Length: 296
Image 1: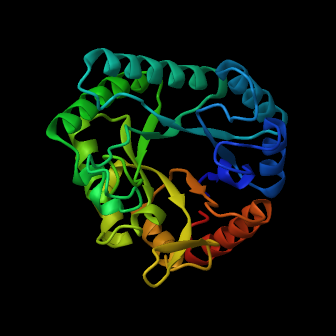
Image 2: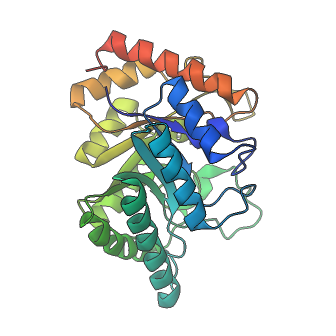
Protein backbone atom coordinates (compact mmCIF):
# COMPACT_ATOMS: atom_id res chain seq x y z
CA UNK A 1 0.00 0.00 0.00
CA UNK A 2 1.08 3.59 -0.54
CA UNK A 3 2.76 5.12 2.52
CA UNK A 4 0.08 6.47 4.87
CA UNK A 5 1.16 9.71 6.50
CA UNK A 6 -0.34 11.22 9.66
CA UNK A 7 -0.64 14.98 9.42
CA UNK A 8 0.68 16.61 12.56
CA UNK A 9 -2.64 18.33 13.28
CA UNK A 10 -3.89 15.06 14.80
CA UNK A 11 -1.39 15.67 17.61
CA UNK A 12 -1.67 19.43 17.98
CA UNK A 13 -3.72 21.18 20.65
CA UNK A 14 -3.77 24.28 18.46
CA UNK A 15 -2.09 25.48 15.29
CA UNK A 16 1.64 24.76 15.63
CA UNK A 17 1.27 23.83 19.33
CA UNK A 18 1.91 20.25 20.41
CA UNK A 19 1.03 20.09 24.08
CA UNK A 20 3.24 16.99 24.02
CA UNK A 21 6.75 15.95 22.99
CA UNK A 22 8.06 14.91 19.59
CA UNK A 23 8.68 11.50 21.13
CA UNK A 24 5.01 11.19 22.13
CA UNK A 25 3.90 12.13 18.62
CA UNK A 26 6.11 9.52 16.96
CA UNK A 27 5.21 6.81 19.46
CA UNK A 28 1.49 7.34 18.97
CA UNK A 29 1.71 7.49 15.17
CA UNK A 30 3.60 4.18 15.17
CA UNK A 31 1.16 2.56 17.60
CA UNK A 32 -1.84 3.67 15.57
CA UNK A 33 -0.41 2.18 12.38
CA UNK A 34 0.79 5.16 10.33
CA UNK A 35 3.84 4.77 8.10
CA UNK A 36 5.01 8.33 8.61
CA UNK A 37 4.28 11.84 9.84
CA UNK A 38 4.05 15.23 8.14
CA UNK A 39 5.45 17.78 10.57
CA UNK A 40 5.35 21.52 10.19
CA UNK A 41 8.75 22.94 9.28
CA UNK A 42 8.39 25.77 11.79
CA UNK A 43 9.33 24.77 15.33
CA UNK A 44 6.12 24.34 17.40
CA UNK A 45 5.64 27.30 19.72
CA UNK A 46 5.59 25.24 22.91
CA UNK A 47 8.83 23.34 22.29
CA UNK A 48 11.14 26.33 22.89
CA UNK A 49 14.08 24.92 20.97
CA UNK A 50 16.10 25.69 17.87
CA UNK A 51 15.29 24.34 14.42
CA UNK A 52 18.30 22.02 14.58
CA UNK A 53 17.21 20.66 17.98
CA UNK A 54 13.69 20.11 16.63
CA UNK A 55 14.99 18.14 13.64
CA UNK A 56 17.35 16.13 15.85
CA UNK A 57 14.46 15.22 18.17
CA UNK A 58 12.43 14.00 15.19
CA UNK A 59 15.42 11.99 13.93
CA UNK A 60 15.89 10.28 17.32
CA UNK A 61 12.20 9.36 17.63
CA UNK A 62 12.01 8.27 13.99
CA UNK A 63 14.73 5.73 14.66
CA UNK A 64 13.33 4.72 18.08
CA UNK A 65 9.84 3.91 16.77
CA UNK A 66 10.92 2.82 13.27
CA UNK A 67 8.93 5.53 11.51
CA UNK A 68 9.50 4.97 7.80
CA UNK A 69 8.65 8.36 6.34
CA UNK A 70 9.01 11.94 7.56
CA UNK A 71 7.60 14.81 5.51
CA UNK A 72 7.32 18.52 6.19
CA UNK A 73 5.04 21.38 5.24
CA UNK A 74 7.62 24.01 4.28
CA UNK A 75 6.81 27.51 3.02
CA UNK A 76 9.47 29.26 0.94
CA UNK A 77 9.09 32.76 2.34
CA UNK A 78 9.73 35.73 0.07
CA UNK A 79 9.84 33.82 -3.20
CA UNK A 80 7.09 35.95 -4.80
CA UNK A 81 8.65 39.25 -3.78
CA UNK A 82 9.85 41.86 -6.26
CA UNK A 83 12.86 42.36 -3.98
CA UNK A 84 15.65 40.23 -5.45
CA UNK A 85 17.52 40.04 -2.13
CA UNK A 86 14.40 38.84 -0.31
CA UNK A 87 13.82 36.17 -2.96
CA UNK A 88 17.45 35.06 -2.79
CA UNK A 89 17.27 34.73 1.00
CA UNK A 90 14.06 32.68 0.77
CA UNK A 91 15.58 30.39 -1.85
CA UNK A 92 18.75 29.90 0.19
CA UNK A 93 16.86 29.14 3.43
CA UNK A 94 14.50 26.70 1.70
CA UNK A 95 17.30 24.78 0.01
CA UNK A 96 19.25 24.63 3.29
CA UNK A 97 16.20 23.26 5.12
CA UNK A 98 15.55 20.54 2.57
CA UNK A 99 19.26 19.63 2.55
CA UNK A 100 19.19 19.30 6.34
CA UNK A 101 16.07 17.13 6.56
CA UNK A 102 17.29 14.98 3.68
CA UNK A 103 20.61 14.36 5.43
CA UNK A 104 19.22 13.87 8.96
CA UNK A 105 15.87 12.24 8.22
CA UNK A 106 16.10 10.79 4.75
CA UNK A 107 13.25 12.99 3.52
CA UNK A 108 12.48 12.37 -0.16
CA UNK A 109 9.02 13.96 -0.55
CA UNK A 110 7.62 17.09 1.07
CA UNK A 111 4.75 19.51 1.01
CA UNK A 112 5.53 23.10 0.06
CA UNK A 113 4.05 26.59 -0.30
CA UNK A 114 4.95 29.89 -1.87
CA UNK A 115 3.98 33.24 -0.33
CA UNK A 116 0.51 34.23 0.81
CA UNK A 117 -1.16 36.28 -1.92
CA UNK A 118 -3.82 38.49 -0.34
CA UNK A 119 -6.17 40.87 -2.15
CA UNK A 120 -4.97 44.46 -1.56
CA UNK A 121 -8.60 45.46 -0.97
CA UNK A 122 -8.72 45.28 2.83
CA UNK A 123 -12.52 45.12 2.83
CA UNK A 124 -12.40 41.56 1.43
CA UNK A 125 -12.27 39.00 4.26
CA UNK A 126 -9.60 36.34 4.24
CA UNK A 127 -12.20 33.58 4.02
CA UNK A 128 -13.49 34.91 0.68
CA UNK A 129 -11.05 32.53 -0.98
CA UNK A 130 -12.19 33.15 -4.56
CA UNK A 131 -10.87 36.72 -4.34
CA UNK A 132 -7.36 36.02 -3.06
CA UNK A 133 -4.45 33.87 -4.20
CA UNK A 134 -4.26 33.13 -7.91
CA UNK A 135 -7.29 35.37 -8.57
CA UNK A 136 -5.27 38.50 -7.74
CA UNK A 137 -1.65 37.37 -8.30
CA UNK A 138 0.28 39.74 -10.56
CA UNK A 139 2.36 38.65 -13.53
CA UNK A 140 5.46 39.56 -11.52
CA UNK A 141 4.36 37.32 -8.63
CA UNK A 142 3.78 34.42 -11.01
CA UNK A 143 7.19 34.89 -12.62
CA UNK A 144 9.04 35.46 -9.35
CA UNK A 145 7.51 32.37 -7.75
CA UNK A 146 8.30 30.22 -10.78
CA UNK A 147 11.87 31.49 -11.05
CA UNK A 148 12.47 30.92 -7.32
CA UNK A 149 11.15 27.37 -7.31
CA UNK A 150 13.05 26.60 -10.50
CA UNK A 151 16.21 27.22 -8.49
CA UNK A 152 14.93 25.30 -5.47
CA UNK A 153 13.92 22.41 -7.72
CA UNK A 154 17.34 22.28 -9.36
CA UNK A 155 19.03 22.06 -5.96
CA UNK A 156 16.81 19.39 -4.41
CA UNK A 157 16.76 17.28 -7.59
CA UNK A 158 20.40 16.45 -6.89
CA UNK A 159 19.24 14.96 -3.56
CA UNK A 160 16.60 12.82 -5.22
CA UNK A 161 13.89 14.88 -3.49
CA UNK A 162 10.48 15.98 -4.76
CA UNK A 163 8.19 18.70 -3.39
CA UNK A 164 4.51 19.33 -4.11
CA UNK A 165 2.57 22.59 -3.87
CA UNK A 166 -0.43 22.08 -1.60
CA UNK A 167 -3.60 23.37 -3.24
CA UNK A 168 -4.42 25.75 -0.41
CA UNK A 169 -6.46 28.90 0.03
CA UNK A 170 -4.77 32.31 -0.27
CA UNK A 171 -1.70 31.05 -2.13
CA UNK A 172 -0.88 31.42 -5.82
CA UNK A 173 -1.28 27.62 -6.07
CA UNK A 174 -4.73 27.66 -4.47
CA UNK A 175 -6.96 25.96 -7.06
CA UNK A 176 -6.09 23.01 -9.34
CA UNK A 177 -5.70 25.06 -12.51
CA UNK A 178 -3.38 27.53 -10.77
CA UNK A 179 -1.23 24.81 -9.21
CA UNK A 180 -0.90 23.06 -12.58
CA UNK A 181 -0.02 26.36 -14.28
CA UNK A 182 2.70 27.15 -11.74
CA UNK A 183 4.24 23.67 -11.97
CA UNK A 184 4.28 23.94 -15.76
CA UNK A 185 6.01 27.33 -15.56
CA UNK A 186 8.67 25.91 -13.23
CA UNK A 187 9.24 22.84 -15.41
CA UNK A 188 11.32 20.89 -12.90
CA UNK A 189 11.24 17.12 -12.33
CA UNK A 190 11.48 17.86 -8.60
CA UNK A 191 8.46 20.20 -8.33
CA UNK A 192 4.86 19.01 -8.55
CA UNK A 193 1.56 19.11 -6.68
CA UNK A 194 0.19 18.01 -3.33
CA UNK A 195 -3.49 17.47 -4.18
CA UNK A 196 -5.67 18.63 -1.30
CA UNK A 197 -9.19 18.31 -2.64
CA UNK A 198 -10.45 18.96 0.88
CA UNK A 199 -9.27 22.55 0.38
CA UNK A 200 -10.47 22.78 -3.21
CA UNK A 201 -14.12 22.26 -2.23
CA UNK A 202 -14.06 25.56 -0.33
CA UNK A 203 -13.98 27.43 -3.66
CA UNK A 204 -17.05 28.34 -5.69
CA UNK A 205 -16.02 26.50 -8.85
CA UNK A 206 -13.59 23.64 -9.26
CA UNK A 207 -13.06 20.55 -11.45
CA UNK A 208 -14.16 17.09 -10.31
CA UNK A 209 -11.79 14.72 -8.53
CA UNK A 210 -11.31 12.77 -11.75
CA UNK A 211 -10.61 15.92 -13.79
CA UNK A 212 -8.20 17.20 -11.14
CA UNK A 213 -6.17 13.98 -11.07
CA UNK A 214 -5.97 14.00 -14.87
CA UNK A 215 -4.93 17.67 -14.81
CA UNK A 216 -1.93 16.92 -12.58
CA UNK A 217 -0.87 13.78 -14.42
CA UNK A 218 2.64 12.66 -13.49
CA UNK A 219 3.15 15.83 -11.42
CA UNK A 220 0.96 14.43 -8.63
CA UNK A 221 3.59 13.82 -5.91
CA UNK A 222 1.53 13.77 -2.70
CA UNK A 223 -2.10 13.72 -1.56
CA UNK A 224 -3.89 15.17 1.49
CA UNK A 225 -7.22 13.67 2.51
CA UNK A 226 -9.81 15.39 4.68
CA UNK A 227 -13.55 16.00 4.49
CA UNK A 228 -16.27 18.55 5.21
CA UNK A 229 -19.95 19.33 4.68
CA UNK A 230 -21.54 22.46 3.30
CA UNK A 231 -23.66 24.56 5.63
CA UNK A 232 -26.36 26.74 4.12
CA UNK A 233 -25.12 30.34 3.90
CA UNK A 234 -22.25 29.54 6.28
CA UNK A 235 -19.43 27.98 4.29
CA UNK A 236 -18.28 24.49 5.25
CA UNK A 237 -17.74 22.47 8.41
CA UNK A 238 -14.89 19.90 8.74
CA UNK A 239 -15.93 16.36 9.65
CA UNK A 240 -14.49 12.84 9.83
CA UNK A 241 -12.96 11.44 6.65
CA UNK A 242 -15.92 9.09 6.22
CA UNK A 243 -18.67 11.61 6.98
CA UNK A 244 -18.31 14.45 4.48
CA UNK A 245 -19.34 15.20 0.93
CA UNK A 246 -16.09 14.15 -0.74
CA UNK A 247 -16.57 10.60 -1.98
CA UNK A 248 -13.27 8.95 -1.10
CA UNK A 249 -14.43 5.67 -2.60
CA UNK A 250 -14.50 7.35 -6.01
CA UNK A 251 -11.32 9.28 -5.16
CA UNK A 252 -9.25 6.19 -4.35
CA UNK A 253 -10.83 4.32 -7.24
CA UNK A 254 -9.55 6.96 -9.64
CA UNK A 255 -6.08 6.75 -8.10
CA UNK A 256 -6.11 2.99 -8.66
CA UNK A 257 -6.75 3.64 -12.36
CA UNK A 258 -3.80 6.02 -12.62
CA UNK A 259 -1.42 3.78 -10.70
CA UNK A 260 -0.53 6.48 -8.15
CA UNK A 261 2.22 5.17 -5.83
CA UNK A 262 3.03 8.25 -3.76
CA UNK A 263 2.27 8.97 -0.11
CA UNK A 264 -1.23 9.64 1.24
CA UNK A 265 -1.48 12.20 4.05
CA UNK A 266 -4.58 12.08 6.27
CA UNK A 267 -5.62 15.24 8.14
CA UNK A 268 -7.86 16.28 11.03
CA UNK A 269 -8.46 20.02 10.63
CA UNK A 270 -11.12 20.06 13.37
CA UNK A 271 -11.31 20.36 17.15
CA UNK A 272 -12.22 17.68 19.64
CA UNK A 273 -10.47 14.38 20.39
CA UNK A 274 -8.01 14.42 17.53
CA UNK A 275 -6.19 11.36 18.81
CA UNK A 276 -9.39 9.36 18.39
CA UNK A 277 -9.90 10.90 14.96
CA UNK A 278 -6.40 9.72 13.98
CA UNK A 279 -7.43 6.09 14.56
CA UNK A 280 -10.96 6.49 13.22
CA UNK A 281 -9.87 8.09 9.94
CA UNK A 282 -7.05 5.60 9.43
CA UNK A 283 -9.36 2.63 9.93
CA UNK A 284 -11.85 4.05 7.41
CA UNK A 285 -9.07 4.67 4.91
CA UNK A 286 -7.61 1.17 5.24
CA UNK A 287 -11.03 -0.48 4.95
CA UNK A 288 -11.92 1.57 1.89
CA UNK A 289 -8.50 1.05 0.27
CA UNK A 290 -8.92 -2.71 0.53
CA UNK A 291 -12.41 -2.59 -0.97
CA UNK A 292 -11.38 -0.56 -4.03
CA UNK A 293 -8.08 -2.37 -4.60
CA UNK A 294 -5.87 0.47 -3.43
CA UNK A 295 -3.98 -1.73 -0.93
CA UNK A 296 -1.75 -3.22 -3.60
